[in-house]
Length: 307
Figure (cartoon, rainbow, N blue to C red):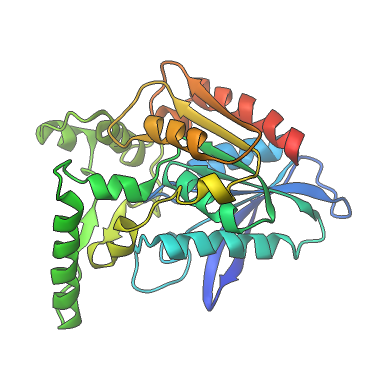
C-alpha cells in the first residue's frame, strides 16, 4: 500500500493506493475507487477491509478521504456536501488514468454506507466507471430528510441550518455535531436502543474500527445541500453500468436495506444484482469476516466479469 495525493481543484485529496501481490509496474491492471462511509476515513472499511481484499484479488484500489475530511485538505472541516463528495470521485478517476499501470477502460467504483450512495451518483455522470458496487449503501439525502420522521422534519432542519449559518456569518462559533456517544458505555448510560447507533458506537468508538480520522463529525451550517439531494436521482435514466448491491439482512434505522432495494428497482442497468447477507447488520458489513467475506464473494466475481 502506498500513500498518495491527488487534486480536487486546489485541494489535496489524501488516498491509499493498494497494489496487487507481485505487482508489476509495466503491466496494466483493472482499478477500483473505494469510498468510505459518512464520518469515516480511508483507513477503515473502505481501505483496510474492502480495499485490501480487492487488491489481493488483483486490482489496483484507490481508497480516498473526502475533501474537508480525514487527511484531505479543505476548510472548514467536516463538510458533508454531496456535490463536493461526488467531485472527489471524478478526481479519483482523473488520478488513476495518469498511472501507467491502470487500464483506463477497466475502472470500477465501490462505496460503503453513504459512500455507496455517492458512488452510484458519481457513476451516473462519470462514464469512466464501468462497474458499480455498493455495500450497505445509504442514500444520505433521504436519511437527512427523514430526521425525526415528522412530516416537517426536513423543513425544520433547514430552518435551523439557516439560523446557524446566519449566526456564523456574524461571528458565532461553528456548530459541530458529533453523531455518536463517546463509548458503548456512554450509549448505555444515555439509554440508546437504536441498533445502527449502538453498532456504530461499537465500531467507531472501540478498537474494532477506531481511527483518528474517523470522527463522525459534521458542520451543521453546511448541511443544507445534503437535505435537498437524492443519491439515486435519475438512476432510471443515467445509471446504465453493471451494478452489484450488497446489504445485510438485518434492517436498521439508517435504511440501507430499503435503499438497496430502491436502487435495484430504479437503476436502468441491464445487469444488476442485489445480495442480501442473512443475519448480518449494517455495521457487520464493515468489519465482520462472515459478513465481509460474503460481500466480497459477490463483488470480486462481479468486477472480474465487468472489468
